[in-house]
Image (cartoon, rainbow over all chains, first blue to last red; front, side):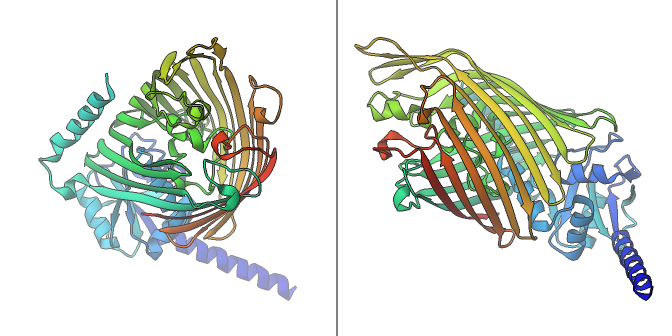
Length: 140
Length: 379
């Protein structure tokens, strides 16, 4: 019985941690993007180079962070990929002439700054990063 | 329109807006990759190499420069160095194109562009983008790769959403002129006998492809059909005529977390006549059909493993080992980091219809094993 309680407690704690970790990432967009929410599937398509617009019709261009914990967590949570797999897939698109590599920025403040100034862009930062100058999209 | 004019137009479109903007605004990007391979066969010599003694004559290097002066417009050019055995050892223009995206539903790309038939043709020469050292040779034959990769002309492409219940369809429609170099693998026998083409084989081509991204997460079903117009090529000592033919593919791919499954079937039926001086006309019809099924699994963050089985048949060839090739392949890839990778692969092959040219093989064993090792860097 004690083992069962311990197991349930640990599982609940793990689930809480996972949920909390995911909540730390927010998806942001330039205020010109005509959407307030985005689905996981839409994010996956945009960041895999499959699609350049959201279901609402809003055209978007993905922006990525250089390798950092926030970047890795975003890729794992929403694309199920690590940063190496992500880059390799994009290089395939770029080297076959099907796409241009997404704009890459050095830091989360730089991400917010770039997105606030560039129409049609979409990105992600940790929730703690100030992002008043951009639109926060809810993810469903 | 000749290929030179198309390239000039593509470059002009790129240069005009480019001069007015700073490099940063143009989003100039430079990418590329280089690989060095090693081939060993226990019998026979594969891919124009002396692989039965072990051969490192398998090198590729690609450099790509692209710019994006406007969100809808991108221009790129890619050059390639390739060495495979006794062939290649030259720098060629891989592709050079301008791409204008009107929206998700429609984009156009023109210049020298990748021909989007089949599941892998657009990326079959982009080694870093897949785990195999050699894609299934039944469809993606490396000795005739340059003939299939690209054409001078254009592509219209886009994606149509079918609603949340039906997924999304990617379409590609292409047309233009395809140019097959005179040293392409399909002319091996003619070149070996001294009757090879006096110049490249050029013919009109057009086709379309559909990729249905189904509502089942990760499942894509697709088909492509390309048409090549009738053509002829002057030979040293005659000519070869080809009737119009189709390049038909059906394919499916499923990606789910660490697992990838894919399968493809392809048919290229090419009726032809060979006219050599002082000899009666002879048929060079071919009706080649290839298929494969493959799976890969990401074992760790850096290590992937995979298996495929591939079969090739030429239904117009005489009965015997030259009529088919069957290949059971085990493969692995290790990504050292985001730049470097290593591939190892073992092929167990039965049949001699592929990979074995007459110049490097006095006698041919119908059963042989091929080991492929490759190291690569991409950026």
